[in-house]
Length: 326
Image (cartoon, rainbow, N blue to C red; front, side):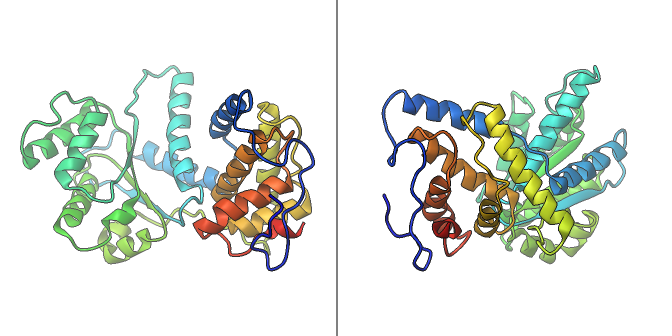
């Protein structure tokens, strides 16, 4: 296991606790499953994501009760696994929880989150959303029928905000993509529901080729990588990593703190993630699985180095492994 890493000469750090190799037998297997499930449920506050949620909530509130008049929207594009989808889905979940806490009637359709497929037609998309809205006849009728019924169900189910993710799949000039784009724009024009459009960095091409639609979506939501030269951003990144470490310990996912506030580990996470907290989480997730599988007490640099080598580098996050030199 102490093989050379892609560090230009560095080698894998040695483990401190647990075994050198993962153990694929009970009780380790069960512990891994429980730990990974608990990790997925963690929600760590991060200022840029909080700002995104705030702007979406403003959009939702300003459009309440407004139907039949042109509505505004929002847009977001950022590299894959930067934390975009997590911000969108956690906003939906938090809004539902706030409504419940306020004693409002339960409405599972209040905020609708839809991920676009890479390929598909407008009719397929309309039918899928109708199924999400509980239409028992989603497969009945032609395109005009399902479009009309979708508009009716948006009102009937009390949808206050529609979030469309993976909009990079709409870039291009095929008839199917243009029809879907026109339909989503029509939701705003006809005052059916406000829309948030989100995608990876390729979504910029879609927005740039649909200037009028992009203009209706206002100034872009920001989820840029941190600029280490800006103290506030550096502090926010450090705080996020420290809070993630603490949350794992508090949830009994690990037995000890992993020391993510240590400067060397922070710098390694920054380099490996490109400054995107979503990618930090994916790297830590991979490292956590490795650590728990070998019965370690915490996530060690050994596990982080392994995660970068086997996950982050193949994903194209980084070229060299910063943890191989610790």
